[in-house]
Length: 211
Length: 211
DNA sequence: CCTACCGATCGGTAGG
DNA sequence: CCTACCGATCGGTAGG
Image (tube, rainbow over all chains, first blue to last red; front, side, top):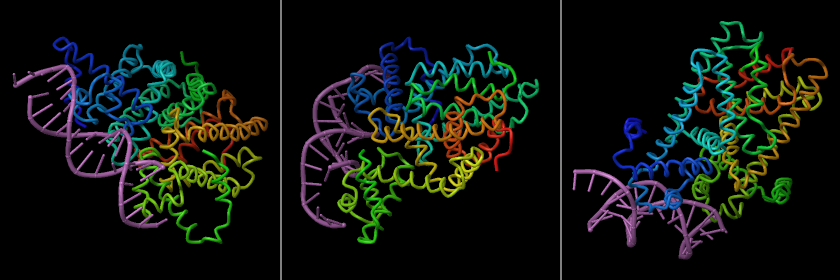
């Protein structure tokens, strides 16, 4: 997947062709839901077109290949996450703020099952060697571990980590926790409260209460 | 999925039709791999037949529907897990033994990527409302949480849990950790060592070293 | 040369 | 286990 084309198109203001941009946004939203429900490979361009009230040829005018649509969906999801973390204080400098922001993100996701489904389904589907989203997820997890590692290092330097906690593996562990909770929550939403679970685990790791 | 038919067939000794039973086992093994690589819905009966050196009609002689094959694959995986936990000491009575057995199971799985793939891919695919394996996974997670909850209760009664640990949410948290680690390991096998991560987390939760 | 689509059809493949 | 099929649907492309 080439990121350049899609990113440039997304960066363009929609003022010149408002109708087309609205249609694009509608298609991305429908694909977001469909990929989350049945995965990328099992989602059908015909069904997506029908859901958007356009013909398949109309759909292919906006997204010439199924992969280009996947790319646009992942970019939109990326922008949503970025918006959440930029809106929220000093999450990139203060470790406690980072985890406070993470709890809010998990709570926000729990209120939007479509978001949870998309990543739970796509991330495991993308573990296949030939999956078009595999490079995206490899890079995304590397970046996520790195960002959380910075937050953990900040907490460690301030002496806020409990003893017996190994900071070297903690980032991958907490990301695994969040991912795994999503699957159990999707299967038993009444049994699992994801923000509560995350907060409980953070209490066993961090010596002070996360705001 | 009806469990009775498959379970009865599996329970039958293969002595009467050794060739058919060998073929059945071969097909289950091939399906195990295929479902893990591309998921249940995306796996094709034609490709499975070809991989086993039989025609599609021949495959359908052993498994009349795709769902019956899914059922057989899940039953085999269930028996493998049971065998592991029964072989291993007093995992059902001693909380420390339970977690020691869990670490060994994770190490065993890491040596067999096919097993990891199958459950990482199927469990998230099965979160779809109409997926045939959804009831299986809902029940499996409920049972897994219950068994681990017993082990945690044993540790709690013996005073082996660290303070600040909430035993009420811990089972779902540790299962989430194991599940989430599988996805990151499948994407970056050189970065993640699953048994090491699990042992590190258990050190922050349990006051003594797990054997 | 641009947009926003349309109806029809290509060669292959799905589960049964 | 085989050949011979079914109704449908897949992602992608044609000219207009």
